[in-house]
Image (cartoon, rainbow, N blue to C red):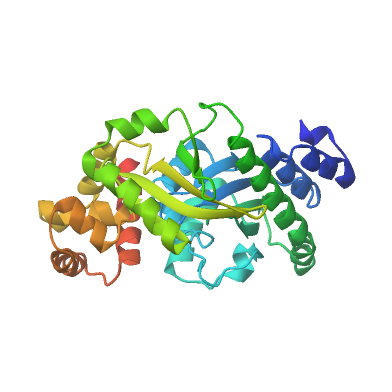
Length: 344
């Protein structure tokens, strides 16, 4: 659709026309790609702890995308950018991140498999505390200093357009009929207490256990009092996020329930257990490894397994000794290597 437009002005005009529409990310990618010789790329939304959302994928085949979304994203340098000091920026994979074991492993498992040589990304923070990345990938060579400077010059445009699209898309949800949302979601206008709910919120909400219902309301109250952002793990292994969104002088409380992983949890755990079979971990240690690799902190692992946080730490100490490692990053690297080996 957008590939038929030749000039940057034509493509930019299409981006402006698509603001608030489902075609926005594709239009903006086409505009940015046209500035760099029509490279392919990705549009990814990064969340605080839940796995990223792949909004546009022109690069990764199904197998590589599945490995990425099932845990490899934990090594993605963009996913691991410090949110506390984050500002919108342009990042080059080859130039912006130091070489370490995580970067090398990520390069081996994603870049080499997808035949990517270098990646250039525009990364902006959204009002709901997610980060939106528009990435262009080179099949050979690195992005030059001149190209990185060109990308930096476009950053204000990307930031402004992404923010405007978010605003229009968010406000449109308050006017549309139930059933338009792609995930379980509700929005509360804090001044009037007016609630907008997706049609999926009520049935999912009604089927949850009492502890999950209580947690949802507790998280909403906490965020409303303190502002900011909060995430919690629900009993069905979904992630609940609550955040204050400020738009056009108004404040809204937005709550979302996102599936932690669309892949069968049982199948994923079985693959991990098989990969670690040579190390003779206990059943409880295997449970701790599984939940750790899903990104759960010690406190949530403890609640999930009905043990104390101290016991979780002791299990991790034992696991690290048996695997001859010293950190969760090394744990992920080891498991990933063995999973890839088992899978093939």
